[in-house]
Image (cartoon, rainbow, N blue to C red; front, side):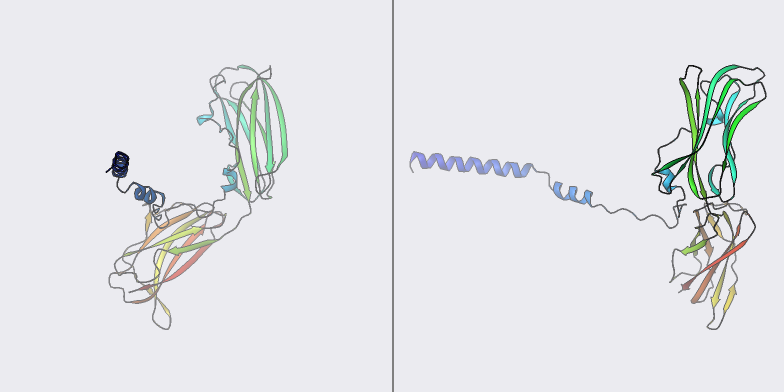
Length: 304
């Protein structure tokens, strides 16, 4: 073998050795692990685990936040005993005209000198929150607030559906802003609309709890009151005796919580251990909070 051929053989041998070492240094399964992590499956949510089925506040959540009134209404720049509070309803307002606003109250025994300029404004947003329209602007030159007195500003709020922001800005006599606080409000039409879903619609086992989701799709608040079972005997629906009452999640007393606009609640109803196979119906009842109107809904399922 010539010298040149020998050199070429050595280079090939060294290059091959480096390639083998480089390949061996790659962690086994690294690419597969990365791919698996990228496509990892998300565990499904538990049945009726989300307390909100219709988010009436969704558009408001996309708007720029407004600093909330401090806990207890205590303002960091105000004299002791002077607090800020909200006047009128808050959050989601169901129909009807009302007044909303903010007010300053002096619960102290002294009368502090303030020298404040208080500006309060009400702004109406379009349905998608992209456009605004001034709905009210008021001003108070607040030199002092006597002990035991309060000063506030209110605006009438029409029953026409819409989104509003209520804000108050407090400045000193030189025009420097001391604080800005407020809240969003949404006015909606009153509607009554309830529904029910089941965790299983067939092959339900006797002696098990059938989970249902009582859903308030309307804006009027509703209180679930009871559930009952019926079995179809081929001709008519007949009541089925249930040994224990419904079970609520989370566990609650006999007076159940009220479901506000768009809220839901999970309810478990025992299927009697001696239940015969066949077609059953779960009946759920409730009461509309503002006028006592009864509501009733039902869903059919099969017992194996």
